[in-house]
Length: 248
Image 1: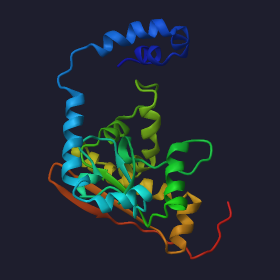
Image 2: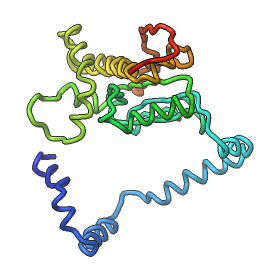
Image 3: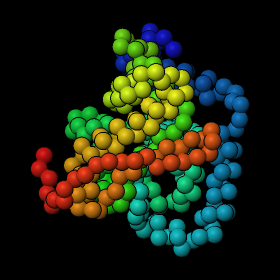
């Protein structure tokens, strides 16, 4: 993907010049392109399986969920299709409030940026009153791979590079502590350190600090190796004195 092509793809001027008729001329042929599979059939089959094996077998459980949700967890996980916390941890609907993004990153608190992540954290703590926030890293993460190779000059991606740069402190820490690490070793070290970086960023949110200080909230880090089928908790070292109010 070249920078020029990427710029053309998001150029607002091009969108403004397209009226409804022109849009239909572009979209219609795209919708008619042959696919390697039938997406509607796949979704239908998946839903039928869920309806028969879950929904119909546990009507009382799903009736309670219809009234309200009360998840115990807020989980930050990667958008990678191989990493689904629901499957990995055998979670049922209603057990975890999910936030998935490239490289399972949590940016530092900022009222002007990353409102989507901030809204998730705020809602999970203040409205849902989750008891645990968990950040889950994983093996062979494409986002971390991009972070490691991130050049200083202008790059080929508009959104990805800006997003994964949230993990720059993790990358710098690993390079300083393991100057000889390369390849898969470096990748794994940064994947795990990036989780720690996100946990540190979580503590910049006032409602997270207040929840931890009042012993109503726990923060956990984890790492899933889907190559070996292993999961481990990562050590989290933080201490916040108990308080009833935090001034920002």
